[in-house]
Amino acid sequence: MYENNTEEVLKEKMLSSIDSGISKSEGYFVYDAIAPAAKKISESYGALDTVLKLVFGEPAPEVSQEYYDKFIDQDAARHGMQRKQGIYSVGQVTFTGVDNSIINENSIVQTVEGLKYKVTSQGKIVNGKCTAIIKAIEMGSKYNVPSNTIVQIPIKINGIISISNLEPTTSGTDRETSDELLERIISKERDESSSGNVYDYEKWAMEVSGVESVKVKPLWKGNGTVKIIVAGDNGAQLDNTIVQNVKEYIDPQDGTGFGKAPIGATVTIVSVTPIKIDVKIQGLIIEDKFSLEDVKLNIKKSLDEYFKKLSAGGTVKINGVEAVIMMTEGVNDLTSIKINDQSKNILTIDENKASLGGITYE
Image (cartoon, rainbow, N blue to C red):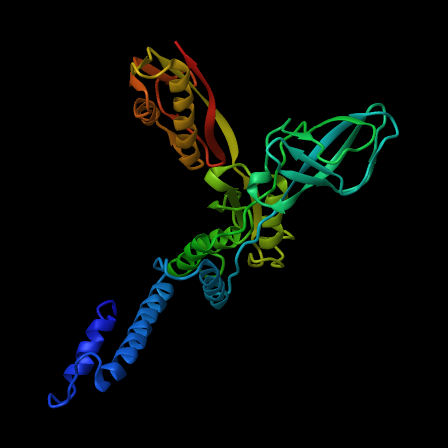
């Protein structure tokens, strides 16, 4: 709105308003007196433009991240909201070693990439093994790692031979970004929430750390019942810790009104569950300059991204899967594909989130 009020434009306007009988050339008193004022006024106009961007939720790259985060937090507070904080990833590791060897509380274990976790309580090797609870040293989803990836002990523990996590670590979530928080603020302003309608339940669930998408099913078991289906980033399955956090926040005691839900509403919280979709590719032809192994890796990456973007309860369209494969770098052509050994679309229920299973070639 104020982008045309530059230093030069303002200076010309100010000089033009002065009597023509006075010298206004650069180096004379009038010019030298007006120039600094024009510069400062133009900076003020620029600040007004920035304020308008912030108020109306537009990108303001000229603002430092620290100031932008602070402004968004203040705007959220004005709406009765706050930024979702991250959660520490947790899990278990199994130590093997000499009987009676002690694993002290706060002992450090890590992945090959250097993601560190600490043991939450002291343990002892019995019959060659000891299972211990671990917690990531920082919040964040990057600490959710697959099984058998926590395999290093950076500081030696006497008597310990090896270590591994037999199950994935879970629950870790990232701190909500300002853009994500702004999206929730705008959603709250636009959606017509009132006294426990669908928008209210969506809003309440989204206020819990780790929840990135929500689907509400009212009256799912008759009057006074609500089912909320929650998912993490890219529709990922959430562990029981986060599911219980949502329950505690919205309806800790069924129907009593001690949470966000009104009296009489019994709320059930469930996470989406993954359903594996196997893809069979027949008659694959690749481009000359690519190796078969590279193309297969590219296809897997493309399909992974495609399935991540599918919403829970959505339809897996066979034409969509085929199009993703055909658009993959290195693919020239193919004869046909099947998904779960079928040549038709696959329908999923509300609680199912399609994910890539295996890929076979014929």
